[in-house]
Length: 342
Ligand SMILES: Cc1cc2nc3c(=O)[nH]c(=O)nc-3n(C[C@H](O)[C@H](O)[C@H](O)COP(=O)(O)O)c2cc1C
Image (cartoon, rainbow, N blue to C red; front, side, top):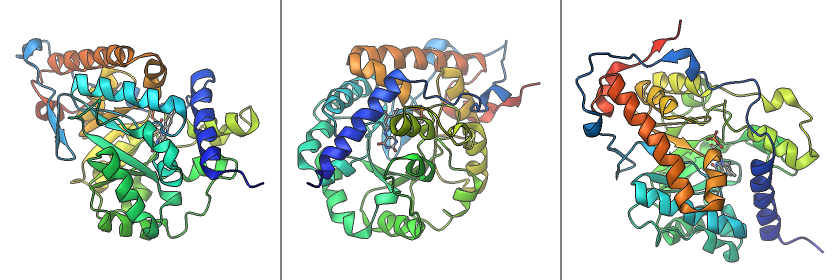
């Protein structure tokens, strides 16, 4: 009997969640590189901490802080709980949220309910998700319907050749994927963002994007969650290829490279963003917003309040960073820039 593809996908999503909650899935040696930069401190700041403004706009939606909940999950039963807790928190804090891959929703109508978060988050910037490896022009109508159903404001397409190569039965043929991305981005009717999953979009990938109608890039660099590591835990129960698990473009480097090559494309900095200080440096280096994924997984299994707690602490630290470097808002923070740590 051939296994039901929807059930296989749901099972894989559940294994990803379990491994992320129980195994050491962060890069072990590679870091984001943000530790090599300092935010300039100003002892004569003229700002009032209570008046520092983190407000911005991304993908045409206003945000109270330049923060997105990173793309995580959907499909498995637990995913519905996780997604709703994340959405409630995003609504409460006035930040954005990326959904996990909606492929399971296209293949399996039963899985669609786990993505229904609009009711809990009527005002939130909500970004749908699909994998580039599976993306075909013929999928556009189904994908557009999935985005309509969840009430998305845009679509993130994730490119993940290393993850797919480490996955049992992964999709390893990326030939023609650039042409398919261009085609889908031009026809889907939603703004499209390209993202990695934590191994980084850097100079080589950015150079391919000059004439591609994309609305943003999430560099999703290395230094946080390593998907080459997760897939090895899922597949072998151990990390059999440690060098591959440590491979990627550190987030700070990815951000600098993509900002240099695509000066006008809005950028998300993600991959190992763990503190308000990481975020402040990334924003000062040219990112429009930051995104955080795995640190929010355990709180999201617990409750919306636990997610709010984690994020509020992060935002409070970011506020102090702006205040301490004399920036009353994000434009001023960008003007301050960063300096190389000695
Ligand atoms: C449990 C889990 C599931 C994920 N699923 C997706 C996904 O479906 N689509 C996607 O683009 N990224 C997915 N990601 C990758 C994240 O969006 C992010 O790029 C990566 O984890 C690096 O960020 P981090 O270091 O903050 O975790 C997932 C991450 C986690 C932890």
